Length: 203
Image (cartoon, rainbow, N blue to C red; front, top):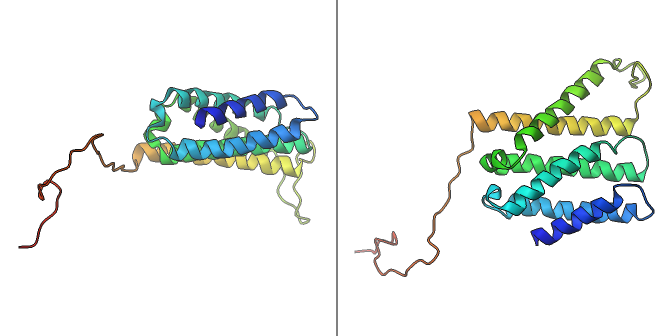
């Protein structure tokens, strides 16, 4: 299921990479695939880093993040659809770093991914530094031109994802979450020994 949905997602992205009349439908399909793949990645693998298919798809997601960010300027339904993909990619990266702390670091390109997000945080901080304070009218204008409200909100969400991802990595180093796993043999033999099964019969 993971491989099938992954292939559908990649094909749809390749088809809507350039605006076309079919782009809205393809954007919706790829977004739905991404939502299901997010749950499969987070809950479907005990050790995601041990699966080659997961590692390959993980690299594809990182490549898509970089290419999608170049398509988020402007307005229109196409741009909104691409922005939804970027936001959902951020959710995937955040949940993977939270649920699978160690496998996240072992997946290919994860360190570079964190660095890329931190670069977006720095860029957004510089943009805010060049923005005038909120005036009495409640509006905020840039020194060069007024920023698009939807674009500003999108950049804030991406920067927030970057800060949360960076914070999660620091927490994983200094305050790792303990993991308890029940080791069960593949073919357990039935035993009649009550002590072996931790069952204490009453006297």
